[in-house]
Image 1 (cartoon, rainbow, N blue to C red):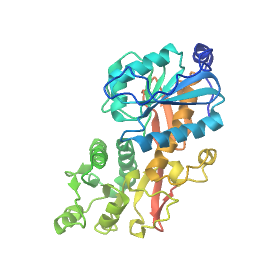
Image 2: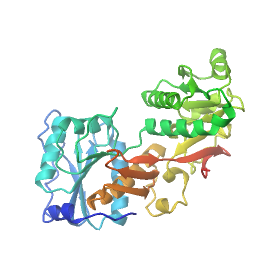
Image 3: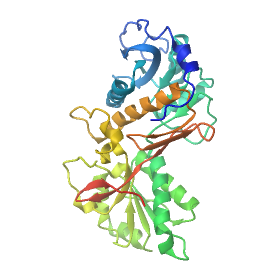
Length: 375
């Protein structure tokens, strides 16, 4: 971990407040009352206060909140000397965020992590002036103007899809010869899957590739018409924006001469007891946490609690890297690189307010995804 930069300004401002008793945990706030006190959890000892904004435990993102909090705790247990974390349950509306951010400012918090929802990230932009360095744990739509103290880090499927387009295009460009490399994109009736497919298509076209309109797979089996659309003309690359079970059904409809790619949507993780040999040869992107158990960064942190599924493990890993990035921000770093458990992380505030995450290339072998060493 890089620990350069000037630590004094943020740390000094945080002195004297972090060890004060936290407000007593109140009952859940009534809906629609942004000024009501929120349930909170506090851990760690020191003079630096970090606020962690989590979804409500009684809401639809309760498991996401618990997984993220566990990951932050794991990173804090290893790297949290001198830091107190206060996790606060909130909704992702701008009025409630404004109240909580003002409270943390008045208590001299040095850093805010969260919110974790896309709506929450957008609400932070809506607030405008951000008084505390803040790492939102999701990415906003588009490229809106961003307050100076606001940074974004997340696991957006669109980012992975654009990386897949870049890697796959480079791999088939020479084979295509004088013609433009051809791709076909297949999605399912899911907003997440469609966002990934659209991002791949836009990136592929911007690289100079050829691609028809996206194809939607409704299952349970590919129709004769769908099979024809997948292979006429034969694509160089097929991008499947869907889960592993759906991709398994479609894999057989694609010829051996077509490179088949997906994002982490199609991953079951290398530690899965499930085996999907029908997917062997399919390539995808995945985070080290789920694909490289021997990675030094992965080995440095406690494993997930029993019962965590793949998506909960992703959020656990997000919590670990969020806290690690937060330590860099506390040190005053505005440019750094980290070998994260979610991928290779790069940040340069002068270039972008977003943390760049480069995932690991993987391929299904013997029914599970295995990490590939890039050329």
